[in-house]
Image 1 (cartoon, rainbow, N blue to C red):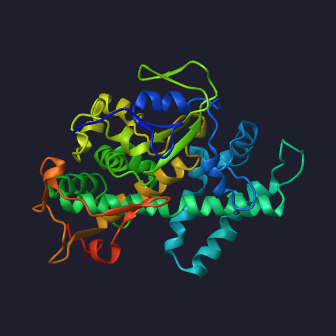
Image 2 (cartoon, rainbow, N blue to C red; image 1 turned 30 degrees about the vertical axis):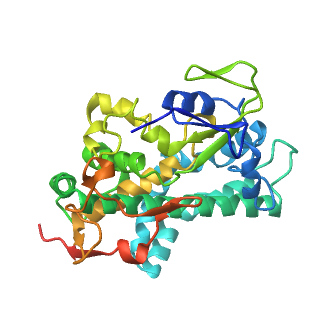
Image 3 (cartoon, one colour; image 1 turned 60 degrees about the horizontal axis):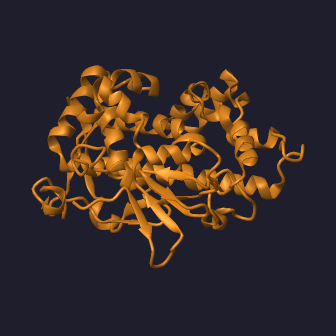
Amino acid sequence: MFFKTILVLLIKAPKQISVANPRDFKKITSTYKFPKSGAYDDLAVSQQNIFSTNSEDFNRMRRRQIGPAFTQTGLDQVEDIVLQYEESICIRKQEFEQNDIHGIPDILQMYLNSINTTNNKKLSREELVSETLVMLIGGTGSTSLTMTHLLHLYTLYPDIYKRVTDEVRSKFPDRSKIIKYQEAKENLPFLTSTIYESLRLMPVVAGLLSRENNFENLELSGIKIPKGTVINLYIEGANKNPDFWESPDSFNPDRFMGSKGETLRKEVATFSHGVRICPGRNLAWFEMLTVMSNLLRDYDFQLIEGSNYSPSNLDPGRNYEPKLYDTESTLVLSPSYPERDCNIQFFRSNF
């Protein structure tokens, strides 16, 4: 496969480059000195927000305001609340009253209580709308789509599906108890590795993260980049760079196992890196490990008869590994034909 770590876009945008070298990717994202480009202005939703802003001060302020919600401590505080949504409305209300868990502030309340350091005022209505919308858009569909891609990969790789199911059911055989996030994180290394590999192979944020170069002597991969160039950080390219990843088109969760795998996990670019790393990444992991561990223990699933994609439908372009379903990328990478390609039969497990 012909692969370039830096692609110069000369035809449509003579002052743009795309970067797919993981080390260059981290170099750009590790500092605020490469501000987001004007391409993010369309995502401002009436006001700049944590995702759209190119202001260092504004981004730092927003991260401080909602940071507690996404720390491990913050997630630990709300884990029981999330799990209680499986109970009836009546029981949930009683538990709220008995445990006083309604006193724990949610993200919206954190914004309502916050003071902008830029003007020493509370967030305006427009700012609250902008930040809330970007949280809803960025924090719901992206995680569910990641789990959709993961289930798709499990159906194509039955040996991996069996290994991950055996791991979950051997560690947590009691189906009367919900598997909590911390328990899954500490006891299910192979499940965790399959999620990392899914994030790498089918990153839900598969587009470009653009930054502006304000330096005269910037060098990436041995190439000097002129000042004023827009640097497009290519997430999928960084995740599949053959100079960095062995067999990049293969679904191989074992690459993330052991001490070497622990180090390699830090190179997956899907949540970005550095100063603008996804602030909700811990919440995403909280959701994925909790949902997937309980799903794999309590249910068996299989492809429906006549599925277009199966372990035997091999793709020459992926070194004859199973063909992946067609995807399209807008803000996120999603199946092109979900009604056709995302049909799976679930059965209550009887192990």
